[in-house]
Length: 196
Image (cartoon, rainbow, N blue to C red):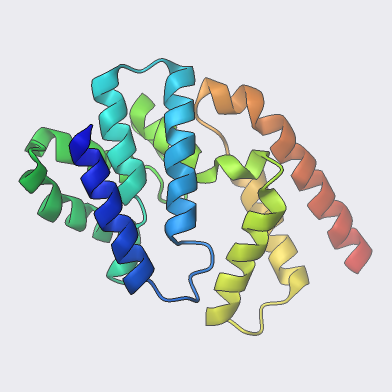
């Protein structure tokens, strides 16, 4: 898909130039990761090639709203999609589908269909992997930029509440990411007890 490659290069370039360095989690590296996982989950969920094209664009743009600011970044991402994608021959129906997938990543996640479930799960797939500690630390560092008083204990409580409320939506992640996520949750609870 030639147009996707152009979109990818353009957006990655903008991320590197325009995103502030304090976004240690919501950055180009995270977007690449989510894109890779969206493709993997799409293959496991056996969606067709046309649907995969839309999933890839949604994953690519899901955090593009950070280029505009931090508040309601999912809606800002949709504004960017609606402004930019028609020039690449995406129909209004397709851009609406892409926006629906992007909005599915908003916490608490409420995906409306399988494609939304795929992008939502790709965004938080790392919760059920060996990369959890790295992702958690990057997010902690990012949040501490805005709240320098955020302590490790408070962060543990936030993480525990989040993992307890989070659920995967695709069969693939339920089967292959949920067990590891529960291991991480148990470790966080143990660490919190040790810190008391």
